[in-house]
Length: 300
Image 1 (cartoon, rainbow, N blue to C red):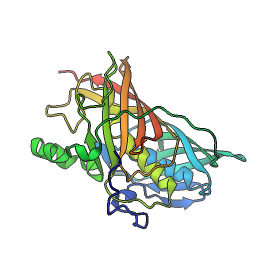
Image 2: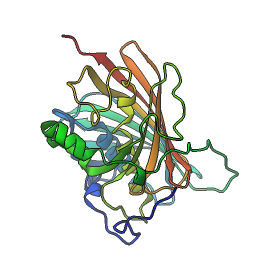
Image 3: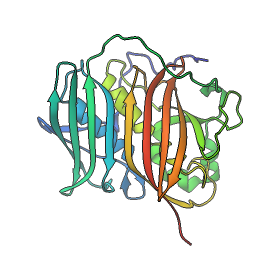
Image 4: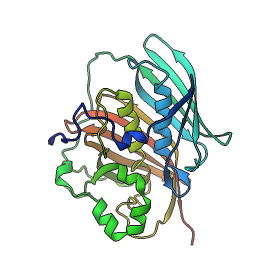
């Protein structure tokens, strides 16, 4: 099922526009500054805040320490008109593992916190869940033209989705697992919209952190409305990320197609929970993600 590698994604390619979304400025040994675009009106995109915070954490370590997990909380909405300061706490540097804690601050208030763990690579026996035999990205249509035609204003505002490529897999497509009662699901192929350097694993991981926030939250609301790109009516819900966790199992390229298999096992108390798994086109499980959202139906 693995398709041909994009001609513009060769290892020697320079970082494209997507990498600019993760760029941060180092102000001091443990202090960084970045800017984030809007995800919702006047709210910084949470996936970009998380990706920049992880970038800041990784910049305080050598390249031999690879991030294997992150756990984060969205405390306050970020303002896309203002810079964000990332303060890194070097919690621990052990022989194999290292821990970093990052606090994102805007106008002297904490808007986001992240804890990340890094380790040196080691060879051990492996196992994993098998990727479902779903259609590959080359067999599926690009949803952007249909969205632009159906909702030109909404498409023009949603600049976040034009930094990457995605392909939604229809629920009745061959190989799609049966949806369990009470557990809505969506399977999406994702990749960055421009090449990333092959020799920067931190950038690849931070790019996937960004991408993971594009569809996972909407999975918690699929019983109420489709994803924004597929929706043709006004939104019926208020949806925001509360926390986000990821685990990185194997090396990958975020500028190659990755299958994001997502399910939501629970929605209650104004909150939704979503679980996701990332597979490369060779069927390797490369990362997992879990997110809890604020989920409320709009009144009136």
